[in-house]
Length: 84
Image (cartoon, rainbow, N blue to C red; front, top):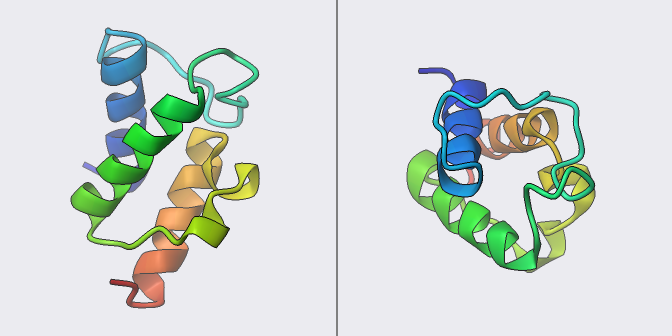
């Protein structure tokens, strides 16, 4: 399963309670009411465990974590940089 599908499935399963739920990949997760501050911390834990990356406090930004597309790009950048 590709990064984007793994992220989408986690969000749908954990926050929409339906693994098959559709999530627009460019939609703001906070504006859509899918993700709040507590959910963001759950997302970070998932990303660190699932993709073997370390999310720094300074990287907890909407530019990195506010849509499926942004999360996927962030994970791919971290993996390319050999982050852990």
